[in-house]
Image (cartoon, rainbow, N blue to C red; front, side, top):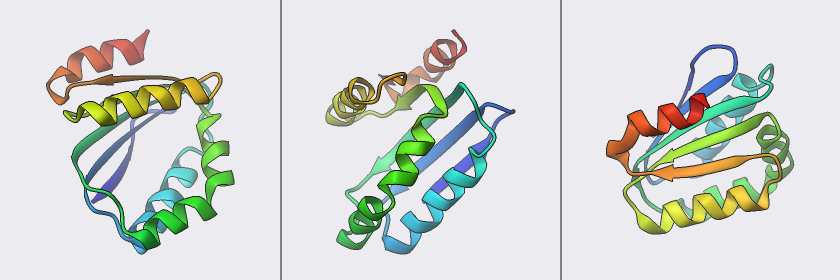
Length: 121
């Protein structure tokens, strides 16, 4: 499951759980791109409920749409990631280093209030 919820003019909340296949990844990226079309200096709350590695087809789709994803990331200043997996926290924060202008901070899933406060700063 991958849900994109628009919260105001400059905020997207994403919920992800389970294993995504190629079709689900296409739909998810399309929805992300369309819902972020008018966002500037945006904030994103990414809630990773139950992560499983995507299928090989989904990974191939992700690589094929990387230019769209890079364009999407430029629309956001901050992303808070909620996850209970230590390796996902580290990987998320590493991504923040790789994308200039985007701050990514990871929180435990029970730290939603802290993540919301960080996004608001």
